[in-house]
Amino acid sequence: MLWAIDIGNTQTVVGLHDGSGWQAVWRLATDHEQTEDQIAGELETLCRLAGLEFAAARVIVASVVPSVEMAWSLFFQKYLGQPAVFLRSGDQVGLPVSYDPPHAVGADRIANAIAALERWAPPIVVVDFGTATTFDCVDADGVYTGGVILPGLTVSMESLVSRTAKLPSVALEAPGRAVGKRTVESIQSGLMFGYADAVDGLVRRIVAELGPCTVVSTGGLGSKFLGLCQEIKQHEPELTLDGLLVASRRLKPGTV
Image (cartoon, rainbow, N blue to C red; front, side):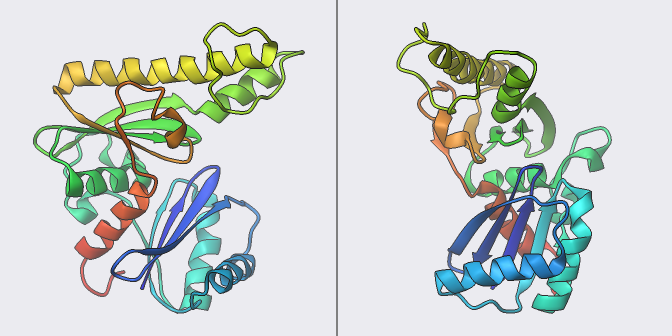
């Protein structure tokens, strides 16, 4: 059994893989104050509700939130009897990285790239809709060659609402038309259609540099853009966890 943990700024995604498939995938709020005992209580409850054993297993982690890593490390050691391996760089898993400096690439972005390379021939663009929306680019030679970082959709809405006196928060759903007839509809149009067109425009610029690419999305909000973004044809919600699974198999025996 493998525990794969993707610790993001807003959400932490936890997956349990038994060698044949993901037995469970849970999305938790990333909590900067949580202790190892609280993590254990939460995951033990989720395992029980899913009919799964809460037991020792191999552990691999991608984290972009250093402040929570100690609590998770203590949880792995105390409750699972295993030290966690934190994915830190492409070098660990045989992914060439052309970035300055190479270690500045987030572990989740490394995981996205290696998962994509397991499934599609490069060039590839992975669009990950999270707190920030990232575009991870793999060139024709299979080299992670950089990407784009865009403020996330939720961040964009929160910024709009916090900096205006009368504009409300809205559901992140596309309205039936671009020209809004109400304030809520107008905001939804700007957020959803504007964001989709921004993503499409950036993908086209990337393709102009790399050549024709396979473009795939992942992340919590990615499914909302399948019908809105013309350049994205498929959505893989567990792509980052899939990348951690690949990484766990590539690392030296006994290190995961």
